Image 1 (cartoon, rainbow, N blue to C red):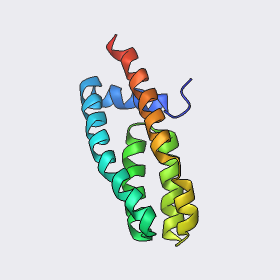
Image 2: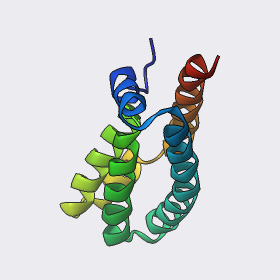
Image 3: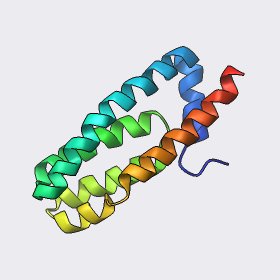
Image 4: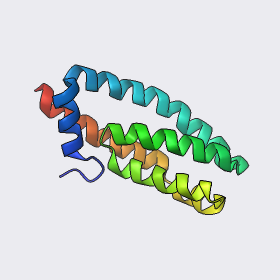
Length: 117
C-alpha cells in the first residue's frame, strides 16, 4: 500500500492517457517542480505570501493530476493558509516539503515500474 500515492488515480490516468504519456507527464512534473520548490523556498525566506499561495496552487494541481495525494493535500492547505495571510503556518506546513516530495516521487516511480515489467 502506498502512503503518498493514490493508486486509483494513477490507474485511471494510465487507462485514459496510456503509460508512455503518464511517464512524460511525470518528467514534465519533475522539471516544473524543481522551479516551483526553488521559488517557494525563496518566498518562504522572504515571507512572500503571494508567491507561496500562487506556487502552492500550481503544485497542488499538478500533484493531484499524478495522484500524489500527500503533496496535493499539503499544497492545498498551504495555499489556503497563504490566502488567509497566515504566512507562519504556511511556512511551517512546507517545512519538510523537499523530503515529502522525494518520498512521493520514489513511491510513484516504484508503482509505475509495475506497469513496465
